[in-house]
Image (cartoon, rainbow, N blue to C red; front, side):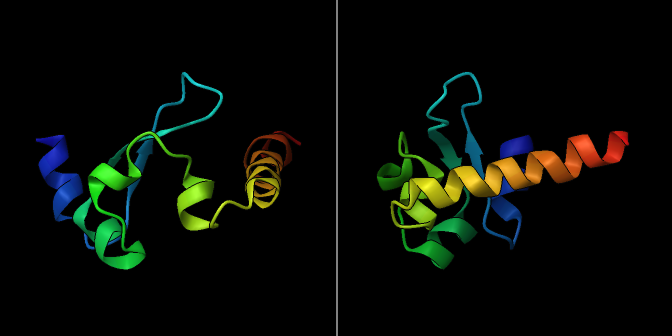
Length: 77
């Protein structure tokens, strides 16, 4: 049921494997495929940075760090 809901969502969604440091993609919905142009088989196992940021891993890590600071550290203060 959850996969059906994700699949019906009009916004591009990707699920990542948080148990791996590489955070590989394990699922993309049809909206992700339409928006970014990657079929699910093409996206599986790749990093979101590789797919969305076209391989700019440094930018991806900066965005993750900024999000962590904003959502975790700032909210605790």
